[in-house]
Structure formats: C-alpha cells, structure tokens
Length: 123
Image 1 (cartoon, one colour):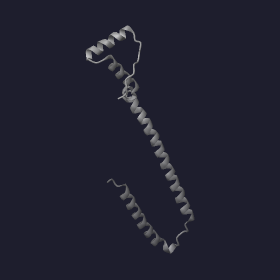
Image 2 (cartoon, one colour):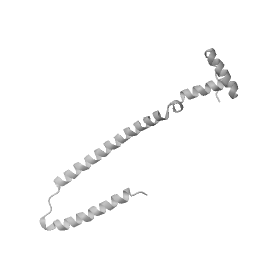
Image 3 (tube, rainbow, N blue to C red):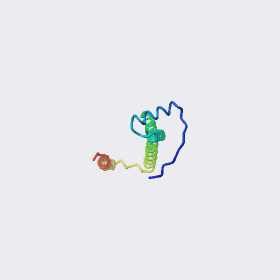
Image 4 (cartoon, rainbow, N blue to C red):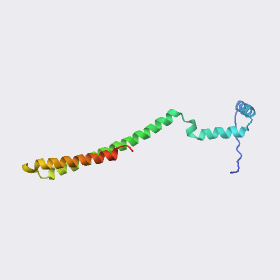
C-alpha cells in the first residue's frame, strides 16, 4: 500500500457543511468521500452514459465491418480475375469430348460443393 499524501483544497462554506454532514450521516471520513468522488471522476466508464459507450462500440464495429467488406471485395475481385484468366487461357473442348468433359466437370463441381458445405457447416 502506498503512503497517502496530504492535499489541501479550498471549498465553499456550503460545500464544506454538506461534506461534513454526508460524512457524519454515512459514518465515513471526508477524505473517503473526496477519494470516491475523484475516483468516479477519473473513471470514464463510471461517468460516461451507457448510450455513449454503446455508440462508441457501434462505431468501432462499423469500422471493423467496413474492413471485412473491403477484404471480401478484394477476395471476390481476385477470384473474378483468376476465373477470367483461366477461361481465356483454356482451349475449347473438341465436340466429341464435350459430354464426357461435362460429366467429369459436374462430378468435380459436386465434390467441390460438398467440401465447401462440410467446411461451413456448424459444429
């Protein structure tokens, strides 16, 4: 425990009478009342209204949401460019092999969707 320091303050006569009356009425020292008042003054969580704290938290959530939206947009843009590049670089399938390629593509796509569903399924 740190050693208490002496502090001299000036208050009006009315404030001194009220401080003395409250100290006697609650059975505490005037120092305890002043320390509690100072602690509450310095502790912003105690003096700041709930709605102000909620608004500040919502503002922070909005900033994080904007970051998430930007990241998703970048991811989608990257995917779009990859798909466009892949489509422009892939040779067309000869007419006689299209049905087999379509069936293989459908199986691969179904497998891909199963994997994605497994990953995002809750639990």
